[in-house]
Length: 556
Image 1: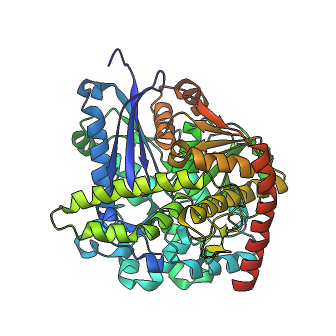
Image 2: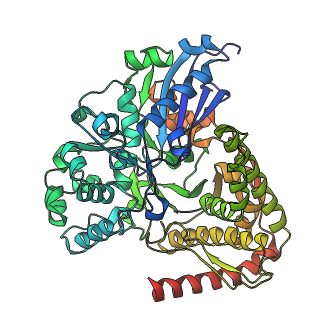
Image 3: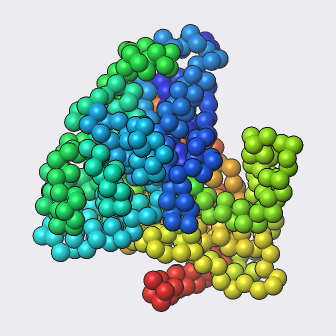
């Protein structure tokens, strides 16, 4: 492994799996990496897609954390003594109910199989009614506590999920002393925390999803929440008012977790953050460049000078001081469905194949899973190849990208996807292309919202699995946007961003900008708009906007 003096772990807890990178601090070289698919999630436990209920068990996270770190150390166990820090990112808002010790209720025998005691995943939309009530309360309040989260509170976020859970599950309500975000709990776990009042809360998570802001003195007051429902009365006092930015250390690795992971208690654990925010750093974000982390959904991150905070951008997810890089305003937008939409269509047309595989009695469950995965991967590749030869507008199909609701602009999780103008000649590649185009149209609406609100977009940066793996989708994105889009060289940009924060939190670098400069790997390619296709998409995009406005007005 050569003479590696300082290395760090960047750990990225995604929707389906946790990914770990062991990174050389000097140059950002990835020494080793590992991935762990959540076993309970893979089995579909605690979820009900019909109800938009998506829950994850903390054991999936704990087992995954141990696995990826130990796997990364296997090729070079001698590097354990050179590990200076660990930082993590997670999906969000993904809160969980905890007791006074900060233990998720799902880890207690009484609640080990109760979905309401699990982490409530970002894409769980069971709290639409509660989000609407929060918005109504904010609209009549003397202070609009939603003004820094785009003016619309979402069912994907912290308070709506809490309210929904304590209304529907009295037992969880009675046992839950407080609530924490996934990114805060992992750092608390690693540092051996056992008193929830001492948990350090992430500025990123609190500002973008819990309505925390300096102007309010922290969270909105208890009176605001009690006016929504008396069940929320007193909860603010059991939460937090102070937050910490992610370049700071949350403390050292506890003796227990140092033993589990095979590391030293000298290792610093950084304050956690949401995946897209650390991913933007891993992709070397620049002011006014929109960093698009494209996976199951998209999270669009932009940093700007702090004076931009005077502009309240309507309909985005949030604008928070220091949520991405200290000293800059972090702005977030995104789409509730992106890769998930492609996977949904793949699953629909592959239904018969999946049933055939499930009925193969000679195969084990794991063999069936792997065969199904390989088959589905090939199916997506074939769909992309066949769809790529279709010219824009040639099939006449127009779709809306609201299969999982709409995150931005203007959150509305009640919306549903649409596919229009089908006929008996509409085949799978044609429908697939229209779905891809719809996600790119949705991405363009986000760019236009920023610009219409006075925030310039100087360029686009593509990050994540879809950006790396699908030239087909990225070319359509460039054509629809009529802008070039640079693709980061590092595939695991979220985990790399976490590694950069770990290098800063452990003192290897003085600040995140320095770590980003030293450890960044740059860009591997750039997709440039095809002028002819960009011209065609101008007309098609106008049709998309017209249909979207009509559907929302008439049906929702």
